Image 1 (cartoon, rainbow, N blue to C red):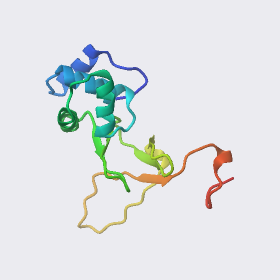
Image 2: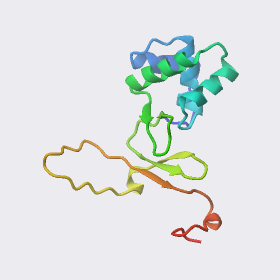
Image 3: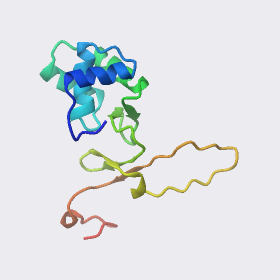
Image 4: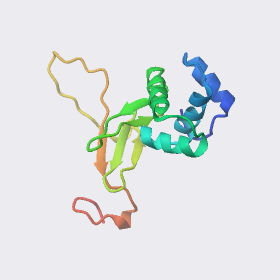
Length: 150
């Protein structure tokens, strides 16, 4: 799902039904956040949003809903280096990720921005490969680390 335009509750309900997910009020609320507003949230970040906007939704409901969304193909789980929490991604198109080592922010990268070469033996059948690029993001003037252009 893209974030160019947000979906109305009725549109979220249609998306859920189209994926075979029963659209409860809780799922529509959580869907609004993870499919429209959030950018690579953790379950805890989803819960914090829910607490502000739809109190009385439990953390268990948040986890269960995210699991249902992943099973339905609405979200992907990302397990990133140096992170205990799973991050959820609503961009279902093939892409890579950039993890900002300073801020912890996660950004989508187009496939063509990273070149991967997989050199494995015949016993491996590779279906896909994605990369997590770790570094710092900022303006050109802000790069003062070794290996970054000034």
